[in-house]
Each structure stands twice: as C-alpha cells, then as structure tokens.
Image (cartoon, rainbow, N blue to C red; front, side, top):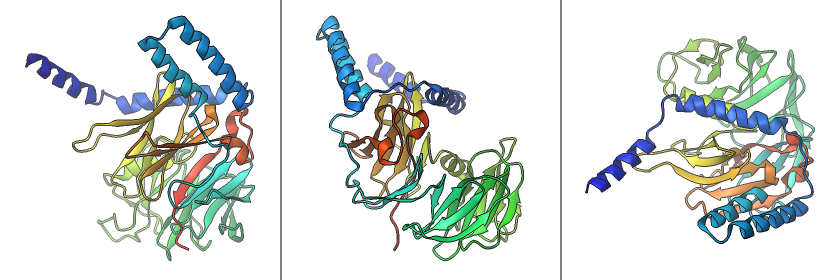
Length: 370
C-alpha cells in the first residue's frame, strides 16, 4: 500500500510544472534552433545516407548484442534516418483542405490531392479567413493574390514587410503587418492603411477572435502585439485605442509568433486544444499539453530540430517538419502510431536539402470556402 502511495506521489510530482519551466524551455529551444541554423550542412543523397547509417548501426548492434540497450539503439537509428516507408513525393493529404507553404524560392499552395501551385516569388504569406485570397510579401510590398496567383491589390510599405496576419469575417477583414519596426493595419480590400503601434518587438502580431472583446465601445478588430520591451498590448485596430488585455491574449500571441518556421505552439481549430513542440536532449518532441483528467501526451520525438506543428482543418492531424530527414510527417492526434511520412520535401518546393535555410515553412492549413 505504501509503495502504491509512493508511486502515486512520484507521478504527481513528475507532472507538476517546474519553476520558470516555460522560460527555461524557451531558452533551450533557442539554443537548439541556433545550433541547427549555424551548422555546416554536409548531406549526401538521402538513400546513400540511409544506407551508410544503417551499416554503421548494424556494426553497433553487433557490438552491443541483442540486449534492451540494443533495442533502444535500433529505435534511435530508425529515428536518425527518418520515418521508414516515406513516400518520395507529396501525395494526397490525410484531411481536406489546402496548405500554404513558404519555400526558399516563393510561396506555394498544396491542395488536398497533393497537387502544388506556386503563387510567385514571394517571401511570407497568410491565408484570408475564407481562403479566397492570400496576403504575401515581396520586399517592402504587401499584396493580396488569389489562389491562382492573380494580384488583386498591393501597397508599398516604408520598409521590408514582415509577418502578415489576415483576420476577420468573410466580408470585413483586416491585414496586420510589421514594417520598419512599426505595426500597420490595412483593410482586406487594400484601403485605409494606417499605423497602429510604433517600435514593436520583431515578432508576429495576433488577432483576437471577433466577439471576444466585451468591454467598452470598440470596432471589434482587436490586435494583440508585443512591445519593444516585451510587454503584451491589445489595441483597437481601427480606432488606434489601447484596450484591456484578456486572459487568452498571451496564448493567441504565442501561437501567432511561432506559427511558421521553427514553430512551437499551435491552437487547434476548435481553440479548445493545442499542440506544442519542445526541445529534448539532442532533439525535439511533439506533445499535447495536459487537459482536465488527461495527462500530457508525447505524440512524436526525434533527434534534431522538428518544425511546426500545424493542425488540419478538422483537428484530427498534425503536420510537422523534420529538416534533418528532409521529411514532412502527418501524425494522427488521437492515434499517434498513424504517421504518414513524405520525403524529399525541400526539392519539391524549390530548395536544396543540403542548405540549412531551404526547408519549407508551413504558413497554414485551411479548408477554403470557395
């Protein structure tokens, strides 16, 4: 009985968050990301690399024998070379919708049948709420284009445009973006460009869902951003009036800041759940945070940096990137043993897998209303 109580106490202590756990995790993640980006890429062809690692693994396994350690080493080797049986070309997506991708040579759309369309030689991108348009950046220009690549409008900003974020309803939208260290907003038809905040932090803003602001007389378009000193602010994007912060603002901002590239937090479409990437010793793991009555679950772990995650529109699948293996992995959130891997990802979006910055970034997975 005492042993059972000890085990229960140990389990509860293990699940408790450590002091400053979030801050320590953030620092660890930055170290992992910096090491990955600064490495010297030396990468043979994928199959040659797989063969070389398999031969090396065989020698190690013979040396240590068929012991529990040997089994663990076998799992480790499998992880190093990537998920087995990965398809060499991106095929049908496991859920309906279209994926917006920022590649090294431009912005792409991947449809649910696996077909791809390049929108143009743009830098960053953001879906409109209904998927009818995409906000893209090109130097100091912000443009709205159709999924076929037709330009509908464009504006010229004071300096290079970063982090476009499009939000609103089907008929009343706004696009926020950063330029020259300041935060700007423009209507979804390209009109009414105006400054919202000066000297903001170099991270993406976030839109509060319409209807979530209950205090005062506001337009409803509330933008959350981080100041240059790191503080979180909420502002009426139309009136320029600062308003009180709400409990969920930090979560929304954190998800928007890390939506692309080496993202860490992704809110499910229902906004009732989330997934996050966190660093481990020598690698990364994808986890679903603790919820009422449910312990935190690790869905996937691997050596090296993992990017994402991105939820499917139906909230059933998570897309993550594995640059070291040059793979995209679609992982079922309810049954993480169901993994759909695809390799040669960098090349499919105009990149070179041997170059550290060429692995594509996912900018959203949306079910278009068109």
